Length: 473
Image 1 (cartoon, rainbow, N blue to C red):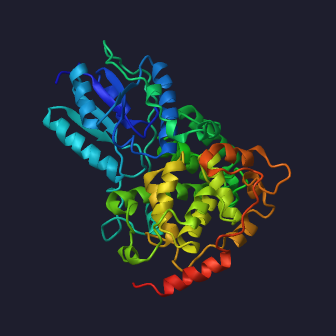
Image 2 (cartoon, rainbow, N blue to C red):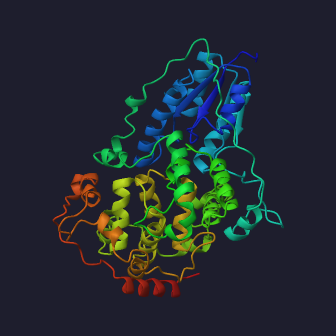
Image 3 (tube, rainbow, N blue to C red):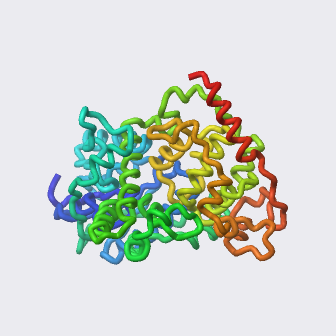
């Protein structure tokens, strides 16, 4: 390999130019850099909303690269074959990428790295998606943390390296390889008519993410500890959308949060803890990959959750028609915005797995289909935490009461009013948009009567506790 052979920089869930170790290393190599994106077996296997949002992010990333006299080369197909084709076409001598940790991505990357090295290609993976690599943080006795709180205490004072600047120049090759057209992939197609509704709620790209972080640090972080629990308020950073696609680095978020903590802003440490919760989820998915498809606590594999998605109560849950207003408002928020408030996620998940006694994987799969901020690690940990089957889980006997939770966190029903149109004389546009975002075959309208609860808060709690008392493990 000569010094002039290009470096293919493979973008995945790292759609930014700043604080990007793989891109920085490629630019510093002194060789031409060819940025690429592969619509491969992993990317194409995501749900409708993540694929739709990924497409938006790629379009913005390409414009950012063009501002640096570069471009993003798009190819579709099996990852290894696409890379080999590009290597042959460009005479590239290296492929650089940012590490990922979910089972599907790891399996692909291991296969790719081994094969390319056998081909004589310099295949390298870099950090960038996390603050700490999963093998860097260990308990005093060795091994990974299975409980969040001691992990937080172990890392909270760790020195985090400085962020890397955006490359001033991305060396271009003399000749660019051919590229497929991003629009031809129709990545929003499975969103159907919901795409236009959800698109208006997205904040896409590196610049938008930086602005979102800046506004939160100035205006929101001081009250974060309290406001984050109030779903009707804009009390969170909303950066889960941008972190999911790597439009901002966790290191940028960490340094901003630490600076806010040093300035005495009250909610800063609570927010930093949420960043470490994300780390905790990724360390778990790396060390115990079965968390994405089966109960993390093996004994819960014997619990008789319902798994038939044709059940009336599952359909009602999916449609936001359970008759439990907190649950229904949250589900409708997801269809309109592609996101769901974190407090609401806990209520929605608890209701499905405990009041309805349905398997958490039904919810996990449904969220993957509909969340623009879908994240494989956080989604898996969140659902198993709520169901009681996961690490650091809510105790199985703790059953959130969705009615009293609404009284506590949405006293004036502002959140419910924003998303449930039925029985409102003049419902807001957010509530009406739900009926334009959902599949037409659901045959629902704002003039429908609001349903009675399919399972009341009290009845659901009783049957959940009865099921737990009679479990076989």
